[in-house]
Image (cartoon, rainbow, N blue to C red; front, side):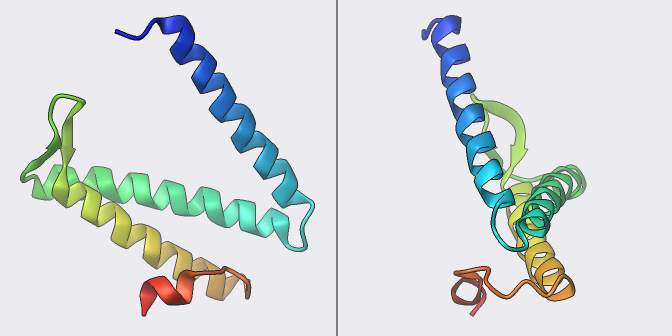
Length: 105
């Protein structure tokens, strides 16, 4: 078992890296919009995964790690994240979301 101090240190490191990249993103042109789109896509993914997993149910994804996660919820979250990214980038007229066209086509 990994000690809780090591896990807390790894969490602090991961959080600081995320905040660092968020600060870098804010200094880019339209960076505030990209950060807002990122937060909205994450929220859409989490919400859709929860509701699809609750309503459809099905095969458990990783029962020993997280017993309530299902494959259907995971797929629903991915579909919602892609839909949110396509919708929000077209509405916000963000033209440099690299890799999205490769993912969708």
